[in-house]
Length: 336
Image 1 (tube, rainbow, N blue to C red):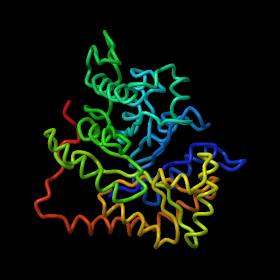
Image 2 (image 1 turned 120 degrees about the vertical axis):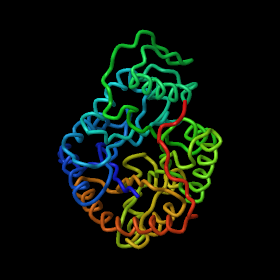
Image 3 (image 1 turned 90 degrees about the vertical axis):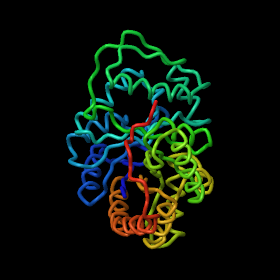
């Protein structure tokens, strides 16, 4: 069981006067008190510390935590350049990088960013998959790559990642097409379904398709992106999360929670809410702390850290109840 935290790299998550370098201090505190991963988000629309810059700063500053993107938007970067940057972070971190990717969403967080990146919105999912395939080819030392949308001749030698196969690459999204693509081409799944039942059904579909494709049923790491807040009661938590949702998305909590996983309330309520996703199969939780301001983020970090042991126990109990002939994990690298 891995439990990580999404770092507040966006200015909408800060209070006036917050020092951006405090994000690094928050990250070091998270590692020190027991979180196993640190993730950062990516965008061209909202002001924030650029994702790969943040991870490059964290790579030598941290010791053992996984460093991840949740999620990186590859269309915003030149694909060969991105392969070089990701390999460099993997080297600097000693092989601790995980790259969750996405293609963007309709509306404010989709088409405008494609326009700024000078790429068409159409066929964005194919472009994403081909970009990931290109990265893997570059890391393997290929001299050319020929997809339908992404094509390069005479690729120069590039920086080799710490791991010969490169960092694991996860996919977000929970549509039937996204589930199939995850099972066939990716090493992990990082969705945020509001209902744990949807997480369970999505993971079941991924595992079945993976087997159909000749992969192990557990070749794909089952992760979850979820917004959490531990408060005095659920009403108080929802009130604060409403402020957070409006600041970050320009929408009320009532709308956000129809799209994304949100868990709040007392420590017991949060543990139960996250436990429902663990029971549905999630094994790497990426927790976004629902608080504005670095001081408030630190307070939430400590409150959530107190739950880590309880959540790990939930996972251990769930695994102990599984069938005794559970297939051991095979290679995380999908077949191409």
